[in-house]
Length: 382
Image 1 (spheres, one colour):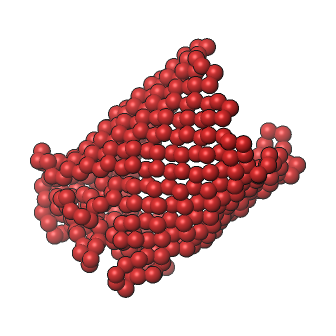
Image 2: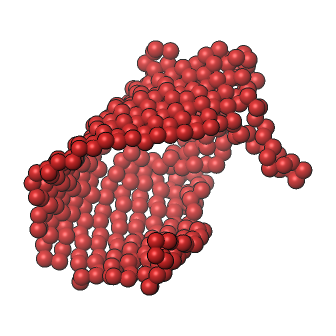
């Protein structure tokens, strides 16, 4: 069972737009996540979950948006929003659930003139998510008896972004810089357990050269940092130096240790773009060096069900990517292509091996045919 509703109301003035809009939905499902044995005699419809294993979730989002364009070359866009997700699911007599709320504010300014483009933005939000569970059978996975567990994660994220483009003859000089402050705290049974603070400064700079009306080259270099996810921190499934943490009931917490340093990426790119009335082609070569990447090992943690990760001191990814389309009369042909090589740098037997679960080659191709108001198409992906 499921349903949703989208609603909105707007006021459109000469220099201002005000909009209030939102979405609300619910979903009730019977669960079917247990794997079945590989056996030809077992039907594909076999469900090893109990008929009583069901879930019930709902999600809501409401936002107020104001757009101001009183100046010809200046526009402001500001949004305030609230969202929440609540749900519970039952399996084997155990109820698990999650309740979350998020409040946020986004504001953006765009200034554009003949030779200058400026984009300045601010984003701030606070997020709270509670996980809980009750064991009505008194047994948890036949190994640990738990009557109740409850943990809460809090995350505050404040970021500001600045982008500047300067046009000089056939050159576009551009730079981006993002500042982020992230605060993460957890509570278990009303006791503060983990407290993290991250401060990130993510810069980018590049040059675009307009060869002619249809063609352009560009190059850029960027440095980006990212904090570990909540799963990385709380589930404790990061593996390093042959140490693996099991977290059967979300009550074993990893506190302020070096396993949760941020991922750091340096990315260099060189690209070419061609655009005409009938042909659009984008191509790009890139080289990425990543410090402290959390790489999936493929081993499933028996308690959480997540794939165990290993923190790799340094990894490299480099490759070629392209996309484009060609229009001919009523036909349009399109494609995407990505070829990537990767390598891990470690002090053990993994040194110089490729990053696992990382496809070397991805591509898609297709076409569409337009007739009056109808469009039909065919596409394939490898």
